[in-house]
Length: 605
Image 1 (cartoon, rainbow, N blue to C red):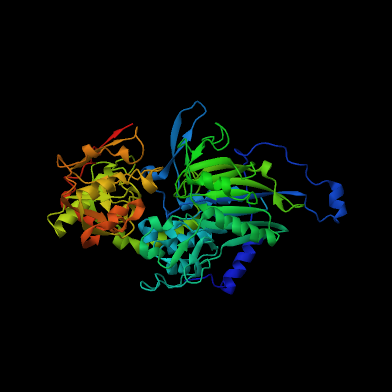
Image 2: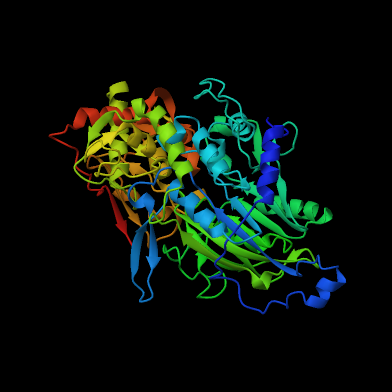
């Protein structure tokens, strides 16, 4: 498995110079409470140190974001908006995201500050739009280098193409199959990827650096990076082959001790695991009901058990926005943040460093999420980068593959786009085997909506290959398997039980499959067995049904072990090809496809 190799000398010099030039800007709104910070160093203290003591307390700006997923251009539809709570209690939506704007916002935030760090919480790449995904996310790494990202944890999507490819993104070099895309060899990331809890099964050692220390003028801040322990459950088996994923909390606590022994007492954990705030507004006051009451999910238990030696937690994975304080094992509040996804937000945190103790004064930590609005000037270097890669992608991406009469969204328990994709996979399945009965699609595999408005001059209602790629970027195949009716019922119940009990994953279903989801009940009972019907007839537990799924689900992914137990397998084309074929066969400029009604699952709240 790859290990981080020494940086090229010229790249190492470039980073050293950048550290000396780091600048920052901070807005201290939101957050940990408010105990008074001890007084700053006095003139007498400066005199005792010969005038070189810069003051006992030094504010360090931490700018952070997560789950960029290669969204270099402004994301389309709801994926490119955030919800903002207004003083009167109402909400409004704001268009957000795009690295041209993210770069400008980060650079403006850093202005006038001498101590600034930019960190990320994983999933910088993977499930990316065509402009990045077509080139194995080299464009995104280039953009992150230009953003002056200092460090990131790995996320689950960093393993979509396997550990060797992740090592290439870190260290550089041309793609082993596709070669170099330009006349310059890909240099790799200027920043370290941290993978403390991802071990090579043979060596039992992390495949990349487990931690990294930022240093400037005597100030030292350590970063430990982990991804969720359950990464193998949500990544293809090939992507995590030869790797083991360890407990997040145990790993962070282990390396916090290592850093402490090295004299690094200020520590931030970058954790690609997250929570679910009580509000979807990015500026929701997470602590208003009481510390930690405003967020739920896996990050809460992690935060409650990570050693008090860690001063702040930058999180991700759930694509949620929150700035919360959650008590550490010693009962003291600690900042836990997440900046939604796709570059729509960044988190602006002030860490007050005590030069006397080398630790962070936690009662002074302040943090807030900031919107990456599109009303600022575009960063010219990012515009140039996007133009370069779009030129290379255009011959493939601009090709029309279908027509729609309106926006086809990907949100909700059952989404119109989920129905469309399931219908496309059923149609492809019937081409492979006319006896195919139904199709099931995992919601996490639908990465963006299809929008009616023209994006790049192709015309309103035109669906381009690039837009289809943005929706389904994983290159999963469409697989056919036989299941008994009892297995099919069990698979549907796994949407709301087992690993999916706390955060249900509702499969999108093809036309003809209907059932009731009763959310007033608990566990597997939320799927009402007697309501499950195919073309109006109840599912027969003893009968055999031919089911189309993508290869990820066919391997039992996303907490659906029963879907990994099918028989009589047939492997078809990739899922994007299935979608393209369906759109081409069922739409035209004069007769576009209308958004499906999303009425196959009856939800009882």
